[in-house]
Length: 122
Image (cartoon, rainbow, N blue to C red; front, side):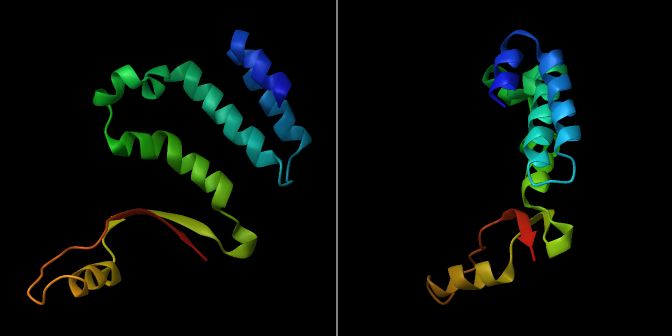
């Protein structure tokens, strides 16, 4: 990984290719995901650098970051079909969260609970 990081400083494409080679070497092992994520981020740096640039953050909605970056990373890290573990991307307020928030306030409260964008299910 250190070699890929050093290479990325001068040649993103070569570092990306090295990540792909490492994915082949570590295919179907727990380590493959590290190289998959790293290759993905190098590709984003090459093809969509503005999404990672804080100066252009006003141009992108939260959904842009979720769809472009986080969904792929979280799915790679957390999803495990053999353990029936998967990510669900949604924009919901669980009823339990609203009920808990209302119970901590006065009886006439119409409080809405905390919004959840990602759930990791088992």
